[in-house]
Length: 67
Image (cartoon, rainbow, N blue to C red; front, side):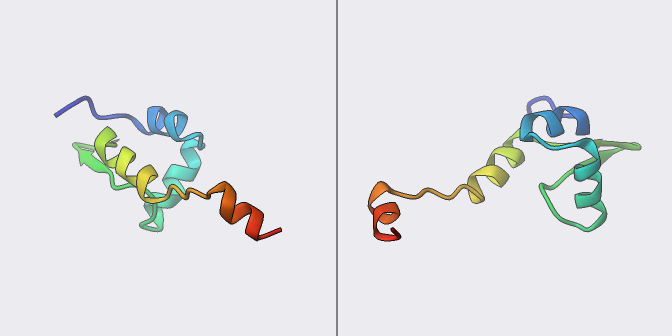
């Protein structure tokens, strides 16, 4: 297992605020997290999957059809 990330590190990586991550946790949204003792941590592998699952790719052909 690699290094688990803090909410601050995760927020910076995803381009979000720490408070957004907190809101997501409160509402059971966003990437999965781990609680160790009283510390919240994020697994980088889970974060990669979270971003990957939400990545949308458009092609130039589809863009031209929409115009």
